[in-house]
Length: 441
Ligand SMILES: [Zn+2]
Image 1 (tube, rainbow, N blue to C red):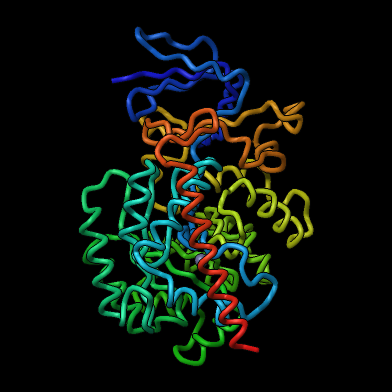
Image 2: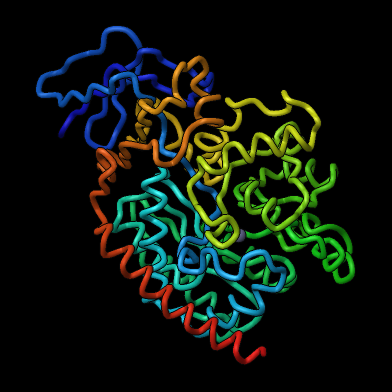
């Protein structure tokens, strides 16, 4: 088994005490972290030494909510409120196929890796393809097959949606890094009966469940009219308010909802940039965490935020909470880094494996190049990560002991081919959008 020793680094561990070793070292053996610390490192025989030259070493980031394949829709129909109906739904109807999902997921995976993400939770169509790409590029992922109450691009009806999930579950049954998941889109696109069926399938299979919850301004009213209570109450009625539910957004959650979520062990994927770009209210992240709810960070899809790296989310997460609470100390940098790493891993039920640099965990880590002027001086590594670091500062990425990027060069994907395929598909989409515009005239 190969051993690699990283020395001369600022090691941001994200362990229970958010320990920083400065200078510190990290020793990995095969896919595992053997030890981490400060002071004189151990020097076992035959170890490869990587001198980090004062760079930051931290856990690979955990993106708890994404629609990776939608990278091919990024940047279209901007700054309008009906782009979903005008462009996205017609384009999805025409273009979404295993091939498109493969092209879009490779493009998004390239961006995720280059931005230091090693674990991602995804929701989309043809998730078996998404899982294959995640496997191919070496990341860790939860791949959520979308369930909706209308005809979807990969399922004519609900039964076919559940069958797609079973296909995905079979494909990754014993996979060490890819986990199949059920992704009922949202309360208003499923309804109580389908949600109950999701809960039964969860009970039977143990597959994690992801849902968009309390995201839309019309959602609480939609739920109240039909089922009485809030979107969180509806989860309870369906049998989904259980430990491990991954609920994205949770903007419209009242104090009573937050208490119920905390008691049940529901986890939240917070998407600051997506929510802000759509003009939605700011999710009560500080209040949710105070209630004891685990909150991870998500980029949401590349249409909702244009980039899917988490470094672009960091300042937005911090600043929006500070604005909402009118308090410059409402959320600390160390909390934002925590949410992007170990707390995100807890949200996805993967904290036994990833999210921190601790003895015995899988070797999921990234190195941040600190040579840009933005890093000098470097008083508080957590604050520097939140307010000054860009995705392009990520230099190396290791996941499960494998180098996914070294010196900015991605190892498992053909960068040129991935981008060429993404551009070609983009050209086809643009032509279709012109047709849609011409018809509307
Ligand atoms: Zn989403």
